[in-house]
Image 1 (cartoon, one colour):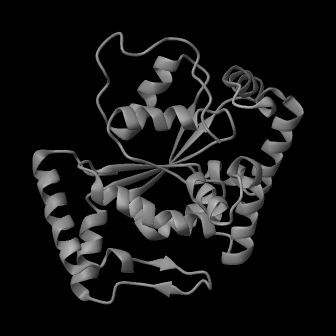
Image 2 (cartoon, rainbow, N blue to C red):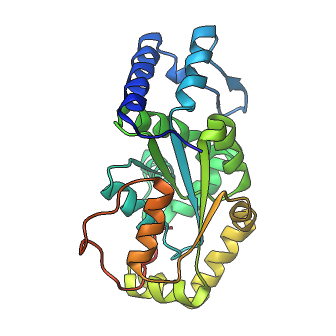
Length: 255
């Protein structure tokens, strides 16, 4: 799956992007509004270019429980020059728009968005960010950090077709708890009961089922260097020079 990052391939991609911008159809790709109705590009040329463009790019979504390593995977992508779109940023932005502190109201606003705009609200709001990242990138890969549900998965599959790959990152509870405790972003990171409750909430949303439908799975139980190498293999990017990576256990990612 995907498109070989050859010079010819990049030239084709740039040509397609130039045509897309000229036709100004990017904002009319398949999407959903708050009522669930669909908007699609209406020109034959636009649809042809959309299919051609999708065949020349890859969108890789990540899914995993807290502390599994999603954040580290995103860091690997960014270090390789691959743009990363974080789905949680959509929720944080919605919090600020409502005058609320994202640190305190993230979960409540996420629920409110889904109630107001549908179960796929976060994914639907993320789509324009993905397209913007693709348009601004010189590469052919974009990472989407933080899928939760099968509804979100289906939204991305519908939008990007075979160009979309789901990467599941797994790690056992004890190891994830240890990583989150070491990370120490806030007091809840070291609270095992709170982590179990958090796991349960995400599983209730369908995260387990989403992970089961992944195209690629990484068991993140080894060294950080090994994990990074496996992520780079999925991204199809070069490994850095020797000594650039460390060998401590792989750290947990952002939820």
